[in-house]
Length: 310
Image 1 (cartoon, rainbow, N blue to C red):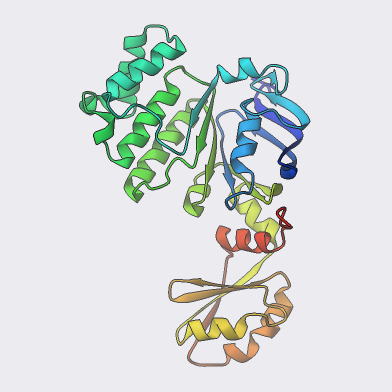
Image 2: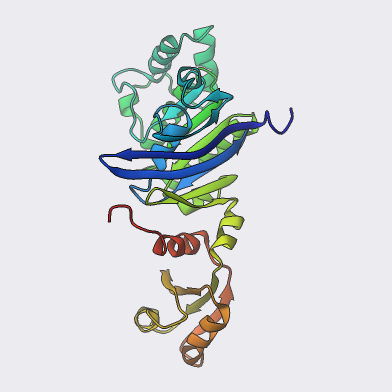
């Protein structure tokens, strides 16, 4: 397969407004087959709107591009047939069993050899032993598995996950991501919106949106580098009181608590080091250079973004 055919999504200049307010502004991206692409940003940043435009579920006001080889504006019906969409809320029938829910979804999609497809999905997602259990009796993690099984029943080429692990315990979240990586290894392309930094780091690439604009994209390492931050970690003593004294000091652009320590960051390494000199001489505190985290980078970029509500 050549490089061009390997591009699943290729869009340029997408925009969308609601009620006179622009919620997505000049968004461009390329996504390759078998990649997990994470969309991050605060509430109202345009993540869900962007994902829906990328797969033909929402018509953009401006821009152009293709998804799965189809035109994003004129061939949305063809795109939708090859997309699996897992919403934030559990949307299957709680008074039906796991198998009954999957059988119903398979009938809706007109899946060939329906019973075999349902059995395969049950086994693939580890649901076979619970197939007679009512969906309403399942925990959040098992509901999540059922929802994912329903999304892949019709063998989509593109999977959309809208904050799929909200309210799910850490063990279930990890198991979910193992399943997503297995699907991607088989050639399925995944777009996922999330608020969790550890989930972002599980994606092959990420896009960070704030107030409707794309601020950064690429691998997590590349996005952190784009922020251009130098970071020091300080621990010991009254770090809460120290945070208040450091805030607003010229050269210090961000002070963020991390457990019993602080991350102190700035984009000018020399100015930052000069700004913290007096506190580094205090024996109550221990200072050390550290690599900026993805969260450090996002907080920094967010502080420089223009609010589209203003």
